[in-house]
Length: 324
Ligand code: BTN
Image 1 (cartoon, rainbow, N blue to C red):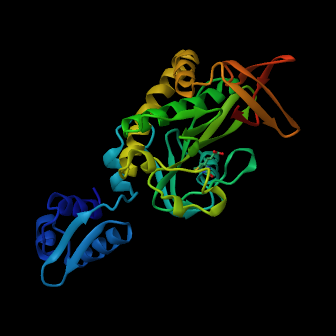
Image 2 (image 1 turned 180 degrees about the vertical axis):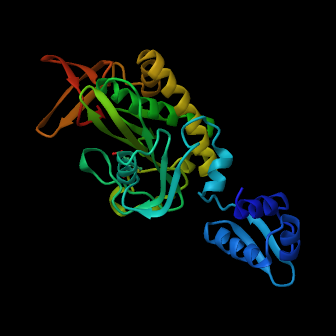
Image 3 (image 1 turned 90 degrees about the vertical axis):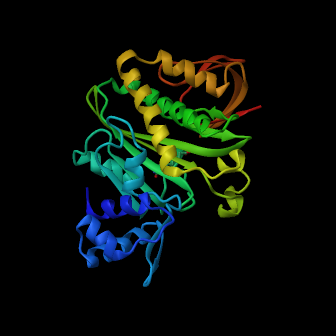
């Protein structure tokens, strides 16, 4: 354990009490200067620690910070988030970074997490806007030994794992909107973007990125998305601990992921369909070159929607849908 983690544990164990620098130094066998320097870094990382030249230091709260210590404390998986975790206060896009790391050989389970992204990527070339300090922007590296045609199912695995983490955090009403959004009361709270690198008939790696608004307020969003975005806190009325939420998500994800690799599509499809409520809904499908309407009759093994239209059955694998 690093000196910083030792100091953090020590302060955490004595939460809300003053501890002198001298006592920390003697009890942990760390020099006074190193104690002071590490506490300074902890404060910069978002921990709320009060310091007084007479009394010493007092740990107040984590301030819902994302850092390696809080993450490791909350992650109880066996692969995802157990190895490399790369955290950034700002980055262009966690998906871009994860793709680069995967190309250099980063192992399955590697996570890239950023407080804010200057070029957060959404589906269909759109941008993803995230409010710093109030949500999660995470990309995961996967190296599944499945056919490339089975890859879309992993986006569904992610959506189901996220929906379950939301339920575990107290959200009772939401829907998964095809293909990858979490919608609460008509507004978008989360999105997923999967990117794949394949060889002939094999997957080299997949990057699955997800963004979720956990604690943002309507006034945090730019004008153009204020009427279409929402956060989970808007609905559960209490602040969500971001690292705890990620811990819940990762356990759910890993369980469904290994099940999917071993047993295939059926289990996750049933869960996804149940959480989407999409079957027999009338939808409008908007494509680059036009739109059509129909009734959803099912979801194929490739994640495509099976839509009954007046011209017969159509499979939908891209574009946007809206309920009508
Ligand atoms: C969408 O709804 O269109 C998908 C949004 C995906 C956003 C996430 S945030 C983390 C990861 N990094 C990105 O640049 N995009 C994804």
